[in-house]
Amino acid sequence: NREIHLVERPKAAPTHEHIKVVENNQPEPGSGEVLLKMLYVSVDPYMRGRMSDAKSYVAPFQLNEPIEGGAVAEVVQSNADQLSEGDIITGMLPWKEYTVQKADGLRKIDPSLGPITTSLGILGMPGLTAYFGLMDIGQPKEGETILVSGAAGAVGSTVVQIGKIMGCRVVGIAGTDEKTSYLKEELGVDATINYKTENVSEALQEKCPNGIDVYFDNVGGDISDAVYPLLNKYARIAQCGAISSYNVPNDQGPRIQMHLIKSSVLIKGFTVGDYQNRFSEGFQQLSKWLSEGKLTYEETITEGFENIPDAFFGLFEGANLGKQLVKVAEP
Ligand code: NDP
Image (cartoon, rainbow, N blue to C red; front, side, top):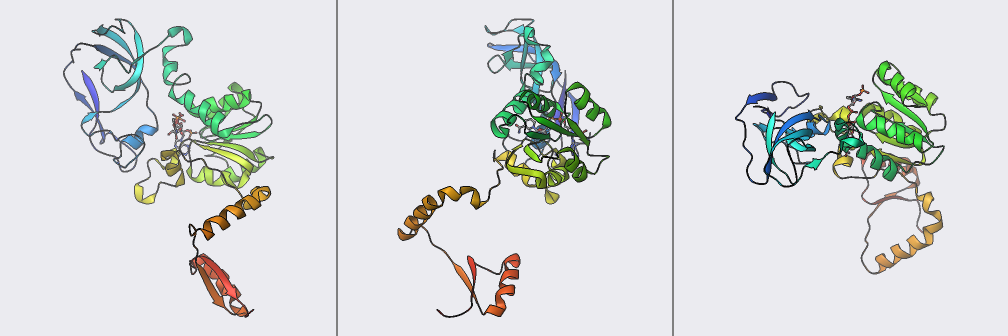
């Protein structure tokens, strides 16, 4: 019975040095357990994160233990009431040809809903990611422009389609002409960008003439840097992934996206002017806190009109503590 173990933690791109096939004994199911024959294993970008021992939203894989992930398997022996021989299940399974699992935690697949593999894709974790990320964070409205990076992948290709269902203009970024043709011809995406052959900034301007209302980001990095300037007022970013940084050694990354994902941060920019009609509410609250001693503040006061420029430059060197002011004259 073969298993696949993580034997060394990759620092950059994972290779065969890090992941090895290992022979082990065929397990026997105990009471309440089933013997499963692995049918389909899902490999997912997030697994790269679990190969590192850095703190994240899921525990790291253990060294010299099977890697585990989403999978579809067949029950070949059952000592559990809920499952019978021949049932097809999905769950988080160790990468083993045969594995023994408790029946709880496995979900029986209804094959009438679609091919069993869809439980690892559009009807599984990637599909749900696309749906909730777009609908809940992206909040797409008819006529808006949705930009999707990693558009031809599992998540991205679902996002672009939901975007079309919602009546949006959908633009997809992907890394080959084959993928961009697929997006246009099969999925009805309005415009595409091949980020490997096109200048992404220029292409974005051309293909998103009305700016971007929803950015569903799967990749982060340089592509996202090119996207940010085109975001419209009240645009929403569903920061789903940052795959461009997953293999970047820690001292060179990760960029902001990893932190956003780990902590489920909603990216939303604003200017204070957005809240203009609530200014008096804000003022009253701040004054109250200040008078109660719940707020305090610092000022850095530069003397002399001629020193206004230096005071200003100093802001970019962090010369100020608290509010930087310039005292020009006595009252
Ligand atoms: P995909 O099917 O999209 O596969 C990954 C794709 O990413 C590749 O096909 C490749 O397409 C693209 N890619 C790889 N390296 C780079 C790079 N350096 N720059 C730009 N694109 C790159 O995977 P998934 O659909 O499963 O996942 C997509 C993203 O969503 C991942 O970042 C993943 O971690 C994230 N994710 C997040 C979840 C969440 O809960 N937040 C859940 C599921 C996924 P191309 O040819 O276009 O480069």
